[in-house]
Length: 473
Image (cartoon, rainbow, N blue to C red; front, side, top):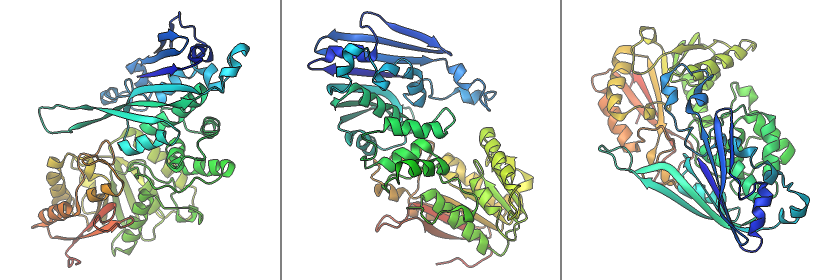
C-alpha cells in the first residue's frame, strides 16, 4: 500500500519542510509490526516527489481478533490495499503536515496551493468508478482510475475490483492530506478500529472547508460513521447531511430494533431499512408465525425486529460467522431489558450448506440478501433442501434486481457488493422460481421492494414461497 505525492511549480521544494522530512534521509520506522518508509524520488526546487509506503505484518492483522483461530481469516486483502489501516499507519509520519505546523520559517507555505499529483493504491472498493471519480472531482481534482485486466482459466470476473487512483489539481498539502484521510476509508468502507465520537471530531476537522459543500456528503458521512446514533450526533453539531442519492450498500442499515425508535425526521429510507420493514409486515400477515428461522442472520438486526411481533414464540438467528454471532448475541442481550419483546431470538451456528434437523417444519424461514452470496451452481441443491427437507410453511427470499443497477449508474457487469456471486434480472428469478417449485407443493409470489423505475423495476426482489396456496398473479 502506498501514496505518492508530487508537487511542481514555484516553491515545490518547500513541501519537504511541510512534511518535516529531510529529502536526503530515508524515513524508516517499524511500530507494532508495521514498517513505514518515506523516500524522495525527486528533490528539486520546482519539482518534489515523495513516496510513502506501508508494509504491515499479515499475522498481526489477525492476531487477537474474535476469529483469529480460523485459518480463513488469514486470507484477506488488508495487508495490500490502501485503506483506513494505511491512513492510521502513516498518520504519525504526516502529523506535522496534517496539523499545518511546520517550523516557523515555513509557515507561509501551509496555505500555499501547489500543483499536486497524488497517486495511491491499490484500492479495493465496492463503489463504481463514476462514484469514485465524483468523490474527488468535486474537491477540484482531475481523476484517473486504472484497473487491471484479469485473465483466468475459468470465467470469474473480467475486470479487477482493485484500482489505482491518480489525482491532479491545485491544493495545499494540508488540505490534500486531510481529504485523503477522509475519502480513502470511504472508498474501502472498512474500519479496523472502534468507531466512536472521536470519529465525529476527526470528520469535522479534516472535512473543514470542503465537506459541507460536497454533493456526496451523505455518502461520505454514512460510510465514515456507519451507526445511526453517531450520524445523528454529527447532525446535531454539524447540521443535517444532504439527501444525495447514491448506490445502496447491501451490508449496512440503520441500527434500529424497535418501531418506536424511528424518528419522524428520518429522510429517505435506506433500502436495507425498507427490506426489513417489508419482511416484518409480511410475516405479521401470515396465519402461522410462531416459529421463525432467520437464515444468514448476520448481526441479528432483522431477528431483533421480529422479536416484538405478536404471536411469535421462537426465533432462530442462524449464522456461520462467529464474529457476527457474537454481535447478534450482544444485540439480543439488550432486548432482555425491554418489556415489549415477545420472543428473545437465539443465535445459532449454521449454514445453508449443512442440514440441521432443528430447522425442519418451522412456520417461517427468511433468507434476506443471502442467496446472492452463494455460488449459482449450488443454489438448486440448497433450494431443494429448503423446500423438500426443511419445508417451512412460508419461505421468504430477497435478492437484488440486476436491472436496477443501471438506475444507480453502475458499470455494466459490476455488482452491488464484492461478495455477490451473481445478481439476477426479474425474468431470471421468475424462471428459477418456476423450476424450484415443480413437484414441491409450494406456490410463489414475486414482489419488489424500493423505489420503482420505469423499465428497470425495483432495486430488491422478494419471493414468498407458500405451502398449498393459490399463486398470486
